[in-house]
Image (cartoon, rainbow, N blue to C red; front, side, top):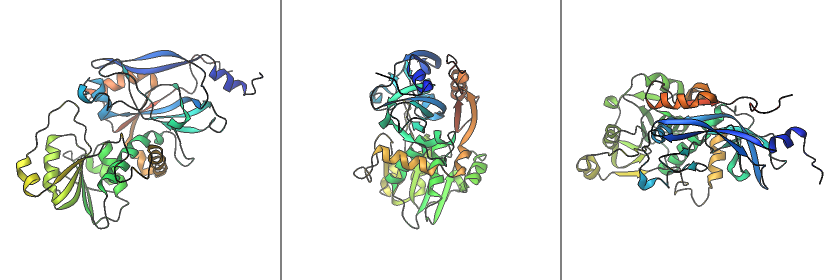
Length: 346
């Protein structure tokens, strides 16, 4: 049978080498090499351009803090290995399809794949990045998806008063989406006064928790702190909803259920991106949700969340610096070499 593919595509299918980031022990990560087979029917070979580090979740993995009881539920869609280690974890990858079905070759795509320079996945795992969305910004697709799911869960209505507690990556993303809603009031709340500049860049009102306005219809909690959850229960109005987006991993959290929660008939509901929110589950698929998320990234305001870039070779050190606080970031971007080091570039 004659191979009718272009030479560059045929070459990329044959004996490709890949490098990926693995957590191999408590607070220890390394780059590993592996051989990639040629893609099979319905599969694509993707060359990574960028990946994003989801700081909160990935530092939990780096520090071995995933609770054993929910280890299976907390698996990333395409991770390898198991918690606590060794595990290849991550889910914010953008690349170019180098080989696969003709209609996919050459397309820029987002994939919920770990940090790896080349990988093979079913084409059903890929989301096409629109031409008006820069590839670097598209690493935020998974985080926007998380925020979309939370808003489907919360169901904000015309004229609502909404507070978002915690001005990190997820909280900022939720507030950015909410700023387009016809709300009566929206506040992004954080204990760090330095977050005011971040809120200003997003076009959202900022408040310290002590000064935040109460009697909210909805409070979305994203601070991953006991104090933030307590304040959320104080800020939501009678019989209102607190949407809990924080993942506490193996930390124990105590909240005063004998105070506002019980006396004012409040509700705390979890929002978790693993499944589509119940309010849309029968009419939207995970693929629909991802397609919506990446389309929203045409707005340049999302560049505010991209707070640094490092080459792929430095990824183990970058994760360690994020975990111990030496490197502060919302979404730190990893940039991959334009060509694989073992590839003939003539």
